[in-house]
Length: 463
Image (tube, rainbow, N blue to C red; front, side, top):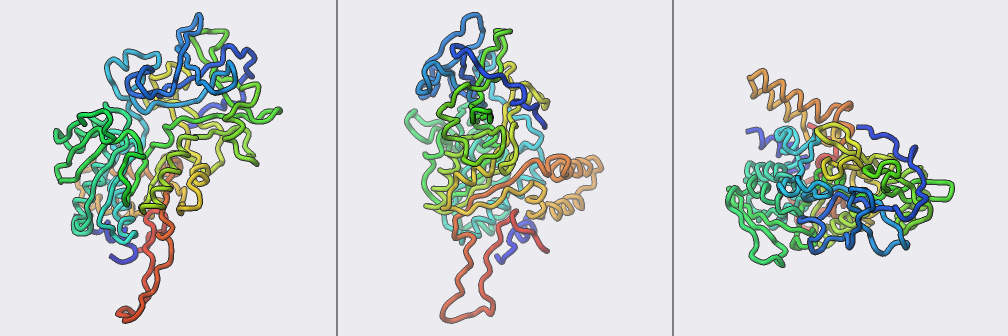
């Protein structure tokens, strides 16, 4: 396959603005009421082994269950703004008892348009596998796979391009902390061809196989995924990780905490810590010019893990999310029923999110890998050939309503006023991926020197 393989692969396939938080955040005076607020907990609730929230107290006169995080200043309660990655339970036992998993109702969800988006992501994975000289073993790893729709469509591309990838041993590895969601994913990918591990100590807690014969494994932690050449995909994963919020004050950087509103014990409020905390002293970068900063420390750890694995084993990581390149300030917001929702109202009942700071991820990745992006979704999809794919679909579609749906989806994905300039793509690559190929030595059968395969989506597609 020659340079521009994304184009050739496509040919083969043809068969919210949140209110300003810091403007109205009071400084906390009464240290006895400082609280930790977290609606992301592990499966099973606060008593589950491994839960980081080590002790809890009931605030007098309040219905809130508050969790103290030991190790900080005496009497200080940390207010880490967070979302859940498994079943919600905080002050919502009905949701937890019904064992419901919370669906992320974002307009650009993986199931929204598999023809215009997900197949192109599948092409990206195959293209990067080819750019790495087609290793015999390929692990497809997704972080936070939702309902399994994204992986299902990528595997569909693999099946359609069997003539290209047929020589590789392909396996699927899903990092998912929620057993409930893993059952949904298993149904999507394997039907009834999956089973759970007999021991809780097994790092692979579920195994299965797709109808096409691809083995699928589920893990609670990224570090449990076997070390091998891997293509990692994180679609709307990083924006759902916990964040720290910091406010610049006349006294220096201070952490934004969560407190019980003294005027209404049934409500929560944001407050500014009166003194420095460990987080505000270590997580804010020197020379930071913004007045308000959100830092996703957990996201930084994940990116460091990805970078280390790519550097040692080869591969690539594609991160797709709402975000910015170190320019935005207060982006923490809630959504409920596709509408903006107060993040402190009825915790556990809404989807909480914060835009990804790609400049922070780039800094955490370090110099051992190459970073490309972020580029807007509009640019990425156009570089991937979405316009050509759209024309093929329209020519084969005679039903007026289906054509209109395709046009509407295209506009949603690429319009600058909609998702085209709000969603971004960012990737990590092994340094050798961008190195100039060495010219052949000895007998030369080609007149031209080899050309490096472009990185699909991040290089302009030319026909």
